[in-house]
Image (tube, rainbow, N blue to C red; front, top):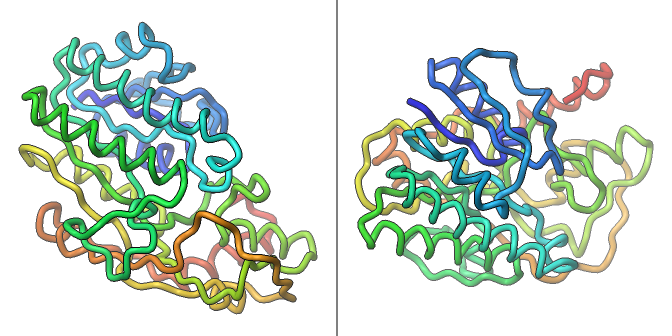
Amino acid sequence: MHILVTGGAGFIGSETVKLLLADGHTITALDDESVGKLHDLPQSRSLGIVRGDLLDEELVRRCVRAEDAVLHLAAMTRIQASLEKPVECLETNVVGTAILLQACRSEGVRKIVFASSSSVYGLTPPPHREDGPTDPLNPYALSKWVGERLLKYWVDAGHGDAICLRYFNVYGPGENEAGDYSTVIRRFRTLRLRGKPLTIYGDGEQRRDFTFVGDVARANVLALTTPLQGYHILNIGAGDNRSVNDVAALIAGPVVHLSARPGEARETLADNGKAARLLGWRPEVSFEGSVKDLIRLDDQGVPS
């Protein structure tokens, strides 16, 4: 297959590009390099790289031309960042997605896999099911919910097939460590290496379904290559959750508590049965084992 990966240099995108290349696909990676760097992707004659962003309509149209499918990962991806810059978040995540869909329609691309988020569930009690209620609490969550609706309109209009993957708290090697916008595992690892206390917002009993990036990348590949017709929403989560206090205890170190941050859910927990049925996807990586591996690499000075 010829596949466009938007956000192809990012945390999840780079991992997915590696798997797709290993499976023999031809990839175009589009990225504005706001986080990941295109030169860090593997050297391959089957990989084309394009620097630019989704708001450039002509560039996006050129990128989708002759592609069989699109994996749409490019987005402003952090809740706290979206609260500080809501206009930028909605422009990138909603307008950018609309531009991509318009380009796919005009160029005849008929399969899209869209990176959504467990944040669309908000305060909905877990376990979270795809057919359950949604409750976006912040601009980022709202942008992902609107993205899902845009994909549904695109499918209903007869333009092609789409799968929306709701990722649950993705972690692993290659994760951005940029301050307060990093995820809790990456932030704790960075603080530990710097000899600083682990900062917990609120009481630390908020729980997250942490899902390893390699498992998420496998889900992306399966969603692209499994012949599903129509419109589908699938949870991509481990189906288990841990408190922030549990994570702090596993990483080890002194802890300091600050006030709880606005706009965040109390608990995430995926019902991942639908992904198992439709894609044959199940999480494979142990939480404790993978976090210990990351800590060991940190202590050895190995970039991760």
